[in-house]
Length: 342
Image 1 (cartoon, rainbow, N blue to C red):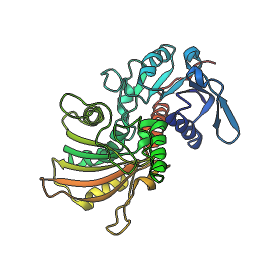
Image 2: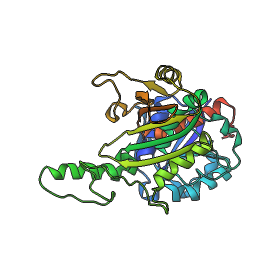
Image 3: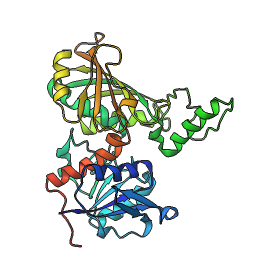
């Protein structure tokens, strides 16, 4: 038994990662369609070792031919085509920001709130922001035991979060620096090579950026509306992998030993926390991996019931492609996706 799957935005970094993830996880597929804009029609994308997909035109695709649509084409494109797909009976799992905060669209991390999938009203499920996903995978089991009261998080986010163009800008600026060339600056507001930029997405009226706002409101929607969150989001010269320094204040007393044991048992979490040189995970280590890695677990003595930890995750995988595929897998397991007649 297989499902008919449409991958929207198939030529982008996340779209290609979705296709790769579907293959690696042996997702039950009978037919698969790679969709993108008209300028990409005819391009070929590998699907496993023996099959090549020809890109089709998103504008003219008939979504009644698909059971599941995995979307990552950009928010403005999803705004048009996700409702069109849902109206044709295709379950949409959207990676963009467009639907995340709409009250009738579930915002889901399968390890955190799979029950939200039973509340689908419009045939659309939203994939959260990449930085939110990895933080909540780590926070959920701790919240269940100790009750999260407040979170202070600083993120160190890779340039792949800005797409292929962001990765190209880091590469080109780095290369240019060795020949005393200033390089070009188009994607980021400051030079990204050998630099850190405390600015992701647009500024809002209160001085926060939209990326920081996303972490606040998405945490409340997914985990608990009573949790207070303050975020500082920083773009760093790393190609793949987001890192986060997280300080948590709980309602109940917490110990390092109990927190570490809870995290070791948590789905989607890998704890590597040796208090020695190299006994922690960095962004380079997590690239290509599915887990959210947690290190540097320690008490925060500045608040009552405080804990600090470091977490890293591949933002293209768990932060986007993998989470979307896991949502589809969870819906199948919960009998929430019905195969349509071919």
